Image (cartoon, rainbow, N blue to C red; front, side, top):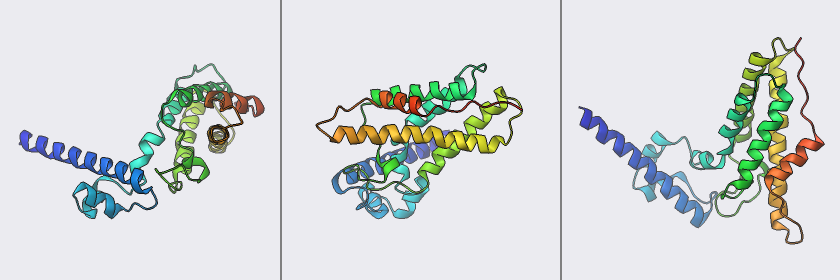
Length: 210
């Protein structure tokens, strides 16, 4: 019985990997928009029905690597000292993410934020991506508010607002980095520097307990 379960899990893992590899190859060859779920399934040697047992759609095949910075940001917000006000904690967490993005060998996933063409990998932003990021950020910010700030007037609104401000800074830094990288007459500033500039221009508000 254990051996049977082991074989099943190995088969599932192999099928999932085959689908991911087929998708990567087809996105590179044809572009994201021109690649269908049927194309990916056929290239992996499975049916469309099998594809949907593993992935909700082709968007899911590219989000994990493109959003690798998000868990870092969420953990950085959680792990800041409890005696810091929320604005200070968010600023420090943003600087951590800016450093990560600057050090990453992968291209900035600008398509997530601008909807513009990123080359051959994808042609438009998957629906709901920004909302998912905002929701995850707001959840962590709300956790920190409850843990460190006591009673806050309308904490849901505060968490949602700060999540959108935080994401706007990251979006702006990524978009500007991509713009500068395409302009040979301009210096392509690291994302970490652009995040710092955003922080200096728009300070995150302090949250007062009631």
